[in-house]
Length: 118
Picture: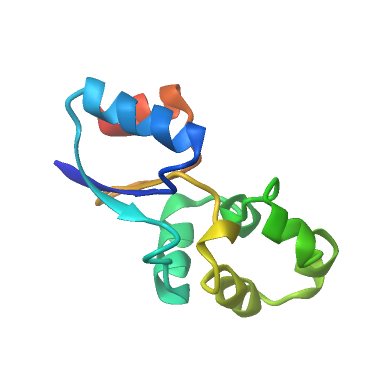
C-alpha cells in the first residue's frame, strides 16, 4: 500500500512524520504542500473521507491563518468558501496530511497513523 504524504519540508512535525514513515517501511508519495497546493475539490473529498470537522484542516497556529483573521471569519463562511480559501495557500492547510485509499489523517499523531496503516 502506498499513501500520499503532503508535507512542508521545513516543518519539524513533517520531518518527524516522514522519518516515522521511512522507519516503519511505509511506501509513500511525497507532495510539497506549498508548491502543489491541494485543490478545493481534493480538500473537500479528503475532509469528507476523514470524517473530521472542516476546521481540523486549517493550520490554526500558522501566521497566514492569523493574518487573514480566520478565527473570527470561519464561523461566518460557508463550507464552499472555506474549501476555496484553504486551496489558495498551502500554509493554511494543517500538515502533514496522510491520504490512503480508505483514510485521511490531518496532523501527525503517531498512534493514529499506526492504527490506519496497520
